[in-house]
Image (cartoon, rainbow, N blue to C red; front, side, top):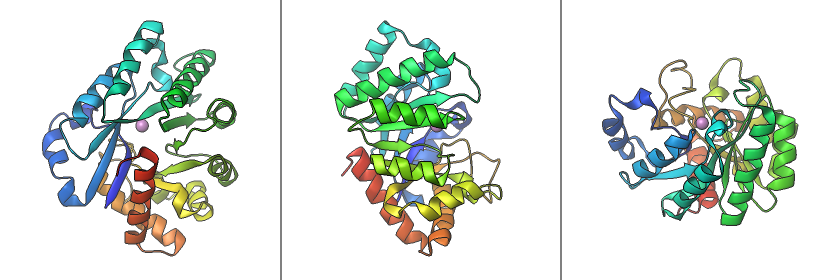
Length: 254
Ligand code: NI
């Protein structure tokens, strides 16, 4: 069944029908969803939501655009959330030089602090990197030793993808692989072994074709699986099965 390794169901775009949508997930073939926090506030929301649905888990962490909210006190409070059984990862954390909402030095500082905490807690990480490939890779290499995790919404070259695979990381693939201008990600998918790929929506964003531009949700991952299958000469069922196994082994969800 489909495992969505990265979703944002606390997003306001789901306010109208969140419960109805999530209650239908098992019927649509979705077996697990990791709901990922982005802002500091959403760290509490994703944990609370994970307790409402048996198939939902939480990743706690602060996105690079939002690290301005972090200080020693708030970092300490966030840390307490990792005692919760349904928190399976740290994320999303990383660097975003596209928006540059926070100064790069501040982004780097909190990225490193969160990576180190993940190492201490032995948790996998969910990494966001936008227009910051080189710095992200250097920091992961230096401060993410022994860590495993997912490079979410991977947008780098196939060479970089293989470097991450060498470090033991996995490549998160979502709707972009179905886009006409998604050639670079298609090449990554052709090159990276299937066991190093996982499926992710990043919903409500990045809906795959034929729904590009609409609100995304986990059931649309079937279109992503179909595209990966076409690129690799497999069936969508094989892709869904293998990526689920991989995601369960990363997040330690039996
Ligand atoms: Ni995200």
